[in-house]
Length: 282
Image: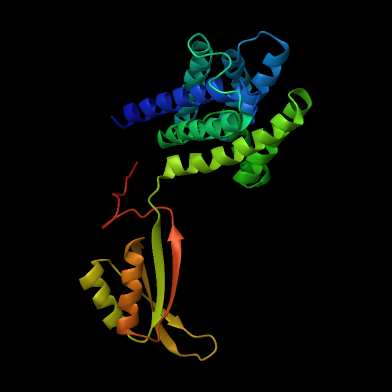
């Protein structure tokens, strides 16, 4: 059941990505990186189908991924994402207008990034990858220790640089905007909008503070022993996770229980477990 859900998400995400490519990026000559960007550049000089080139171009990357990344699950889901994306890209060419829906390059850049980013995020939610840059970035990360974000920039920037010589530098600059915005949207779509707050509270009244958090916010608190480096004084540090709206109430609770407490509030993308989203063992 879980695999079926993931495969449906990957297929839906690949369809949305293909719509973004056909409706916004291809009409505006925006090659935002990856194998699909290379396919766009080749298509500019030939009549070869972009989807077919994406599929063929990913074959050697599959072999590299199998060699350096391993994992049957990784290969199957990546193959599904690439195959469905390639199919949809060529199939939609017969149904969507060749000139797109607007000739405004800025609108094409932004909407292409948003729609494509949503597609990428949905594929990631299905525990798949889009092949191409994903595989190369992960290989560079594992082989040379290059951070994933830098790996993406190296791979995609090379494609955008080539696009600058072929499509023009204005298009290349807009492609950089597409690449950046798409990354933000992808992360949001993959991880969701649920941002929680983490609080570290150093107080001389740990029992009073934690008890009020239990009673008013109904949130758990973890007690951590702490020692001041300057004074050498033994203190207790509380660790607590709350939702964004609960942050103000937490400040009032701490202030009322111990006006001399020291509190640091941070941000976390997700909280899983009791009181928050269920922890998915898969």
